[in-house]
Image 1 (cartoon, one colour):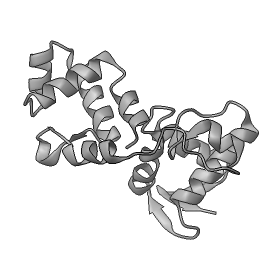
Image 2 (cartoon, one colour):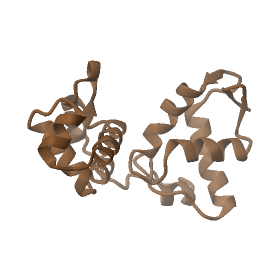
Image 3 (cartoon, one colour):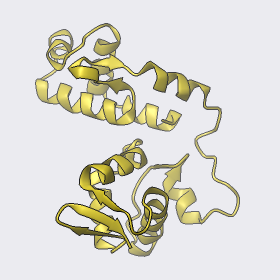
Image 4 (tube, helix red, strand yellow):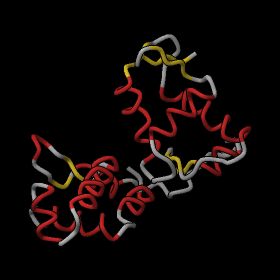
Length: 171
C-alpha cells in the first residue's frame, strides 16, 4: 500500500467512520453500523474497500486493523511520484508508485497502460482462474483510479487476456 492509496481509502467520510469503529474495537459489520449510525450498505461497502486497500483484515469473519500493512506503509520512504527517468509518459501520468490513479480516456494511451499491467501481472501461457486474475488486479486499483472488474474487462477487450469458461490466459 502506498501513502496515496491510504489517503484514497480514507478520503470518504463513511470509510473513515467505519475504519475508526474498527480501530476502536468493532469486529463485525453489525457492530460498526451500531457504533457509527451508518446504513449497513455503507458499512459493507466501506469494509470491502478498506479490505481491498489493505487497511482492514477479516480473519475468520472478525474485522481488525491490518497493523502490519500500516507499519509497512509508514516505513515506505518513497514519494508518491517516484517514476524513473525514461519511463513512458503514459505510465508516469496514470501510475503512482505502481498503483493506477486513473484510466486514460484515449484508447491508445489506455492500451499502453493495460499492456504494462498485463506484463507485470500475468505470465504468458499460464492459465488463471478468475479469482487469481481479480487478486492480481486489485493492487493496481488500490488508489481508487478504477476497479479490478473494469480493468479485467479492458484487458479482455484489448485482447491482452483471453477468457474461456472462466479461465484467463495472457497472449
